[in-house]
Image (cartoon, rainbow, N blue to C red):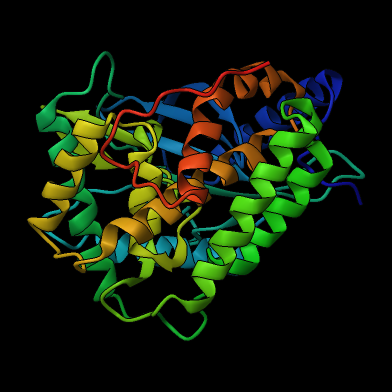
Length: 339
């Protein structure tokens, strides 16, 4: 059986989206919804659609790749259900179909594996546009602090399974990048990446783990996965949620913020959860780790090569500072000269 998610070429991508729409329409028949419009959102680790109904309520339909098992998807929904019980958080929550099932397995074209489908409550809001404000950066930190606080109190059921983001997952990502780095890196730059990866792994191996610094995290909380409503941020897309260091989660959010707003974010976070006194050096380790993982994820897509190359003057500057033990998190870094 062929994998449902095949989009290594433009032709396969078009074919996948045709299959996906048929699956989405078939899945909709299993929900008690008076839906009026289905709108494609994006193709990534999942294929997503916004489902608008005859009421003011909308939903998010997700078609999942083979990356996660049915048990892992159920576990994500269990975590989201707990998070939503907090008065301080609003997150997407799963919707059961007419038979009470939260994860559906939908028939598709012959020869392809049947994909899993879930339906989620839509979280209203807009993505940030224009320059980030101090208030938004601070509020994002508060939101992540609350997220970690509530997740730390979650008691997983016996069958709970989610990915672990750490040394082994990073090794796998680096192995993948080893096949694709020539699309956007020179051999010299690749050696720089390898040196940074070795340092990151050595730091992870001796890092002290406790309930205060490690647990269930979102693991992908950049601004694309945050919507704002009246300047209040709400986290969405928990498809990568799993176990990891809280600082790793923070690093993913800080990557796209200016140094001043990184500081505002951390102040917001510490209004909810205090960080250890030496958190900066660990946070910088995770910052470089998360940055490299982003390139690992996108390097296999030829359409991303140009933007990946454009980012290297800053990416390699951060890596060089990290390798030279020069603090960089709250400083404006000068880009390196690219050939």
